[in-house]
Length: 259
Image (cartoon, rainbow, N blue to C red; front, side, top):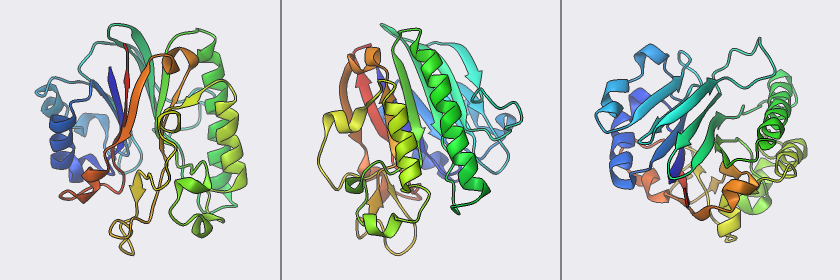
């Protein structure tokens, strides 16, 4: 089972680029972030014609997440539990029925800038709610995949210029500590489990020739439960997508599981 995460930065602007990548990479499951679309405006029929089932949790102009799956989906849930007043569309989860059932959550974690401030408080609170939900799901002892744009640079090696991010919400000590608290539940960060090399990034800003200079950061991650980690075969970043026509500032990151 090939499971990808991809922050597309607007479905309307990236439809052609996303279609090309889906055709080339052929993931079984694609978790999308920043679709920036209401559910009723998402081009569902387009992806259904490509063989994907489509589930969305949309929001007009901002945020929004989706799951595209060539495999059957069960028990689709929208929204991160824990705050009934949180109206931001940042979480969707479903059980993917392959050779083995895998519970997949696609997430768009808050950016948190400027920090300190209310947006940063929201980010940390959101991460706390995610940890509580993950802890509850782990009691089921099934393969779990939590993938998406985490807006977290876990380590200095995950930024071309870590010194430029020291006051940014993506790299503040509190942010990285909250990310580590997720991992201490027993999760495995898939990419670093397979690749310890530096200069591996999933995001390049549109400004200051960041792509041309390879001035990137790695903020798109797959966290795996022990049962999913046991099934992990590979994890790769499709870096070349960033050099295509009208790209997102993120690129797809994918894992393959023996499932």
